Length: 258
Image (tube, rainbow, N blue to C red; front, side):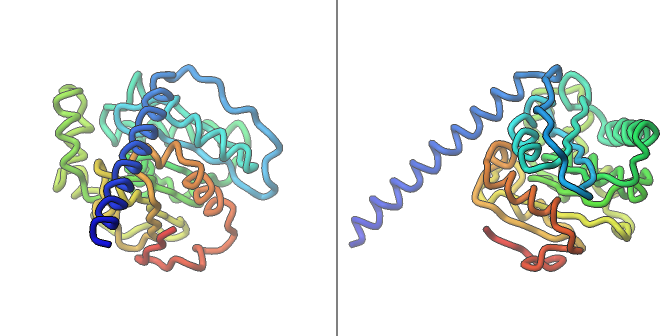
């Protein structure tokens, strides 16, 4: 039995590795679509559902959001995306300011009251900074962070080598001045915040995504899978559609494994 268990375990690891590789390849392929991507065909938005703004992550483009955008649109959500430079490598605070300006522009044109934000990786930090430091609490109903290292990640050192002029890589490092500033103060009232982690995410392990006062969800995927997996899109869509204060299965500071 021990031999059989070992063989079974090895096969499982190899299978998981192949699946992770496919996820990464899909993520890269869509990221290379760049920022000039056509929006997903819009259907009829669900009644009483605010629009959803997707924010892409570090060294990524709007193209990286394509699958998540399409799936959320098919679920009846009105989805918006916005480019943050050629690739997203600039100052997180400046990116948050761009998002704030975009939201106010949308509000002026459409009489928008509130919207939801879904941010992948560093995009979640952009959304969190906007909500905490730039008055976003007036406009944001829900913020969902996907694989967002709120306590920082040493994998950002790779970004220092790949994009040495991009300030974001330094801001993503543990105990950075940016993260210390972002941690100060309490989360704003009236904004529901969720952190969705991948249980095999090596770039932003679940332990780096935990934040006091936030509802946590852990899914069987990796960093790329948080954008390309259909199960993740389903969970995100359910959170967005949920009229409750928080999912009944997950309490603040609790974890929901699916």
